[in-house]
Image (cartoon, rainbow, N blue to C red; front, side, top):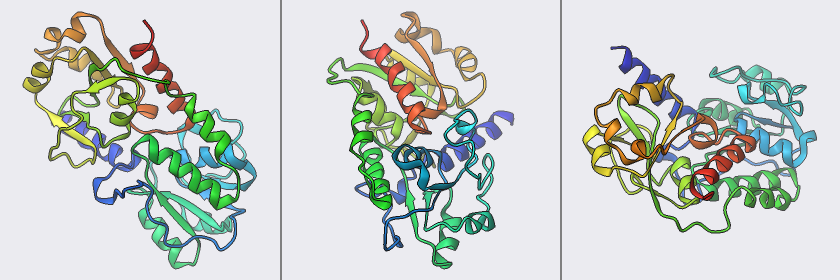
Length: 292
C-alpha cells in the first residue's frame, strides 16, 4: 500500500502547489480580483513563491512578507523579509495581519481559506494561478499594476527564456508519477511549456478522471503505444526514474533505446516555482529540442 500513499501525497502536492485546478480556471487564468486596494499597494505579502519572486523583481521595497518556500533559502534578496508560513503549512493569519499589508497575493487551491479570512478583515487580496505562459505574463502585468511599476523590463526578460521559433515537432511524454502513471496535457504549465520548444506532447489532447486539473493518467499499454521519441521524467517522487526502469515497457520505448530520457526538477516544469527555476527548465528544454 506504500505506493498508494506516495501517489496520494504527490497528487496533493501537485494540487496545492501547481495551481492548475480545472474548476477555478478562467479565460485569462488569473483569478478575478474581488477586493483591490484603491491606490497602489506599498506593503505586499505574497503567499506563493512565484508571486513573491515577481514582486521582488518589480520592486522589492513593496514586499513585506513571503511564504517560507525552500526556493528562497539561498536567495539573498529575500532573506531579510519575514516568513508568514513554513513549508506546506497554512499561512499564519495573525502574522500576516501584523505586517499591516495593503495587498495579499494568494495562490488558488492553496491559500483560499486565508484569502477569504483576509477579505473579511477588509484587507485587499489577489488570488492567482499560473498554468501556461500567457497567464505568467498576465500575472506579471497585474502585479505591476497593483504596485504601480512598469512590467515591460520583466516581460522582456521572459522572452529570453523562449526560442524564437520551434518547428521540430518531436513526440514527447512527460512522466511525473509511476503509480498511477501521471502526465500533463495541454492545460498545464508543463504541457504548455514543452510545446513552446517544439515538443509534440503525446498527451496534449487527452482528458481523464485525474483529480488534478491539467493532468491525466496513462496505462503502461498506452505509453508503449505512444512510443515517444523523448521522455522527460520529473523527480516529483524519490527514485521515480529507477522505478520506471523496472516497468516491462521501459526498454521497448524508442526514447530509451536512443538514450533520450531526461530528468527535470519539479520546480520549473510542473510548478513554475520562481523565475530562476522557470529559466533553468527553459534552458534544459533548449538543450533537448533546439541544440543539435
